[in-house]
Image 1 (tube, rainbow, N blue to C red):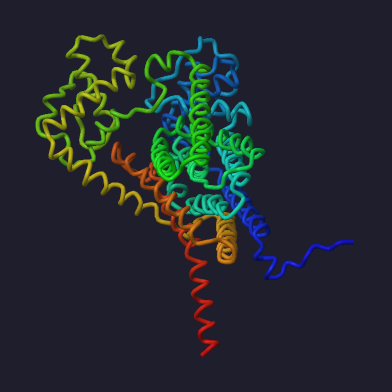
Image 2: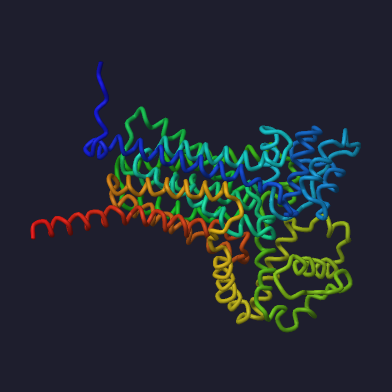
Length: 514
């Protein structure tokens, strides 16, 4: 009977053994993170108004049979009761019986229709329960990680380990333990979906820069895995529009690859780009066809852009600038007029001023709030204010908004004094697992591979910053930037351990010769 060779130092250095060990470490990192999410049960703390609308629409479809994307008014009214805990209200609405009203398009909350889609899918799969949202998100992350490891089961699998270790560490921040913040970014909620885009973005970036031409039999497999990641990335962007900035670094590395490629490599890159473009367009088109046409007609598919840019001027302490209160006089409809601070009410004030100036009825104004024409008014307003007060606008975008980014990141510092003993154990397990990655990396990986991964992570992190310059940074909106900071540190440690190990080895060898 043949026995496997002993796992001695020489075997431990074998590339195939190292790849298997790194995949095991990556799988363990996901198990640890998923266990922590399930233990925390943070889906019960949801006070985010916009997500209540998505939950109402999902319940209407899954429990009461409303058309996909439609909501029963009775369910929407009850779930928009922000004074009651979401779990209590949710339990009531799933036992209403058959709502008598006709289903309608939900209130336009300005965040697009992505969360309506994922909330409906989550409850179709896991039932009409709040816990369905984090389960659905974990399932998508597991699929993404599985496809990544299937394609990059070598040193690049460190991306998966560092990703889930970073997400585990983030459970020790105010994103989870400060209830005012946690209620605005529940795990599995809309804002948390920007973190789903991480592994798909890495996959696309690495696939486009991969210099190893696959054998003919592997091309279809690689294309299928790439297509799956494209679907997940498009879905994440569909839910959380700020994730669209990840496309920038992916295009950048693709252009750099085109510049250096020729012949067979260039044809391979063209095939991959075609897969990405076709699959992304087909998936997005299928979503739009499945939803009521009114969403597209009213401009409700994506989140608001110009609205946030206008109200973000309120981060400047000098807002409202000069005579803007008199220019945008809305006191007949909103008595307080323009307010200090970045508040949605300022956008409403400008909208009502425009409505009255153009003799448009109140019913139309309410119906088109956050719609296509509303965004056009906000765009024109932003440029009008910039022409009238250029210094104040420039100061807002280049001084006050970056200052808010720094302050938000400082607030999200890691805290070892978490109140959950189980989470502490899981974080320690994640840390030990990460140390295992460093040991394997020191023995097998090349520093150049880990350095490239660190650079790609840094590019993704930099690409997230324009989101906060368009709008503004708050602790509950900077989760992706915090992640990339942690990810860069983890990958940089992986890049540093092998050169450090080699340097220590040379030092001891020199002493031995002396």
